[in-house]
Amino acid sequence: MKRKINNFSRKITKNSNLPAAHAMLYATGMKESDFCKAQIGIVSNWYDGNPCNMHLDMLGKKIKSSIINQKDLIGFQFTTIGVSDGITMGTPGMRFSLPSRELIADSIETVVEAHHYDGVIAIPGCDKNIPGVMISLIRLNRPSIIVYGGSISSGFYNKKKLDIVSSFEALGKKNTCQISEEEYKNIVKKSCPGPGACGGMYTANTMASALEAMGMMLPYSSSSPSMSKNKKIECQKVSIFIKNLLEKKIKPKDIVTKTSIENGVKLAMCLGGSTNLILHILAIAKSANVNFTLKDFQKISNQVPIIGNLKPSGVFLMEDIHNNIGGIPVIIKYLLNEGILYGDCLTVTGETLCKNMKNIPNINFNQKIIYPLNNPIKKNSHIRILYGNISPEGSVAKITGKEGTFFRGKANVFNSEKDANQAILNQKIQKGEVIVIRYVGPTGGPGMPEMLKPTSYIMGAGLGKNVALITDGRFSGGSHGFVVGHITPEAQSGGLIAFIKNGDIIKIDAENNTLTLEVEEEEIQRRKKEWIPPLIKVKRGYLYKYIKTVSTASEGCVTDQF
Image (cartoon, rainbow, N blue to C red; front, side, top):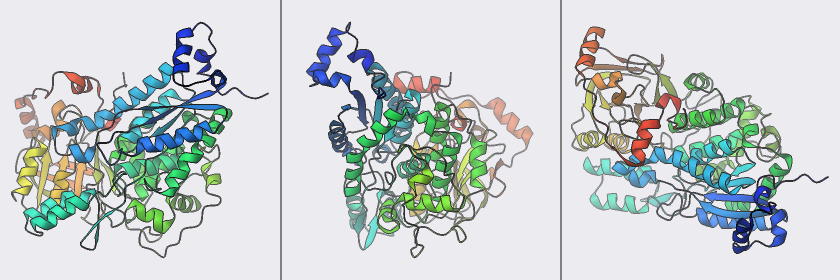
């Protein structure tokens, strides 16, 4: 007997007591014969104000066309929000970036639950889009697939490849007279040549790679460029796989397990991925009721090396993995064969990760993009979880090794990113200093705004190996240098970072994973008694609600923890 696949939608379409609902469905173009079909919600983070998202509606239309070709399915497109990190970076708008993840999850959950869709195909672009849709799909726990919007093509100027970080670093170079005003403008104009997410191993590509390894994307989805023939083919064939998931009743919680999460984290760390991976995986794991903590990240960090020579710390982009390696599945197969990844995890193909890789070609190491495990770029991961008196609940360091693994210097303290940026651009930062940016955490920011400007300005000014930066905020996936973020407790909550003064000695030890303020405990307690908590920066609207509900960075900054 044929298994029903319209288990949710039939509560509307087969209920004779809902004539108004049926009338509205007829108005959408449905025929009577369509009332027996499973309904698929096709959700994208489309909006045309951001290159990462501007093409997602087009991909959604291709997916809807492929759904029509499946006689038992019907698709309905809808959209959710997005925030451009590149456009809002360094402005008050960036406070909304991380909180947008929760709005994305809530809005998808709302539409799918309200309209009784039987399955979901989600099409994210910019980086908060990806964990946002993933969290919603786990909550809904209906057959679902993620189709990544794909990364952008590289820009080109003066015989060099460009990407979004090139434009930020160009400002630092211009301000230190390394390049002219004309060169600066040309770099800015040519950094982003069209649609797609930022091209390096920044947060969007980090999360896409991780979710492909976790099994929530079809093979090649994370590495097929936004406008490639491969991305179009993926959109055309995804309907076959969503129908298979419906028939086999395979749901996200069957796929997202502690083991599959470990696969995603291992791949992302091997590729030198973004520190935002930590926040998003913690939130995804919480949604799936999987016990995955900062301790798990540190354990994995000690197990896997960096083998990806990818921006921001390296040289290459995701398009190079696609063009010269053959795509992310080639790397996954290599890590499976070497025993790094677990092969028996279920995926959205209905098969295990290992079976998906059966016909994938073996990696060819006659290139400089991906290194072999026996000759890695760094023997263990760049992501380090640091504890100490500054971060008793944890902090996240991004240490690739090229800037060293130990830093000790005098604090130069700023209570906002804006003040720190001005100091860097005005050449008021001295070699050997530890820049401290505080009151930019989940509640202090609010919204834990991502910071690419200060790290890019530091690199552009040629100070990458000479200064460190610590913060209770977070960094862009494009950030590199000796940086530590996600310091918990944050300054707004009375964490020790609030009591640091200019000239204090701070020690960052990425070998022993410690972050220490070298001030006597008696003096710390004296400063604590004198500290007056600053007023929260907003008192109404979404950010006010976010302040009142958000968890700490060490718990993933989720808003549904109660």
